[in-house]
Image (cartoon, rainbow, N blue to C red; front, side, top):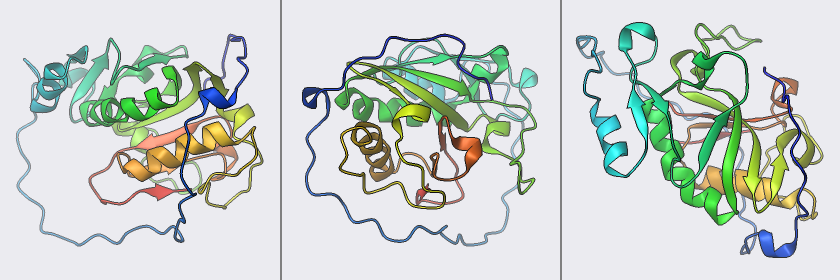
Length: 235
């Protein structure tokens, strides 16, 4: 995990920067949703990505500055793209040493675009992420293939705009294994936790992991899209 290599001035979080909310939503126990087994469809021919996919064209119609990348350069990514401008009014800045980690699947870019209005509601204009695509990445404890391996996951570390929130500092008290929602009522934890719960409520990402999940996620939110389930696994 690339550690932040530069500091940003902290902004004071005032009540005016935190969106008003209604009564906290009650969240049921979180479990993975079982998915039905279906016969696999015939494998389609590998797309060349020349001229852009339907996903890419939909993003471009919505004004997103997203560029198709050669499929041959990223064989494990179904629809590789480079994000060169804001998504839903929010800029995503990769902080690290390997530019390959800034590449993502178009489906992830589409989810981030739809998440834009949520982040804007919290006064967020820029997000610093530590990686999207990590070729060959596997989950440390289980050995399963990670969503990062196909560019369908992204690790968000900092949120900047009217406030400056860092996951490692502003998530608050970490309770391993405990659900992060509903958000706590303490002033320090409230803004970032409210954001996490708003993203979970929107059901744009099928996996959303926080520092409560394990120590490997102490400094970021892991957001992932997957076609295997229609629900959000939040931890």
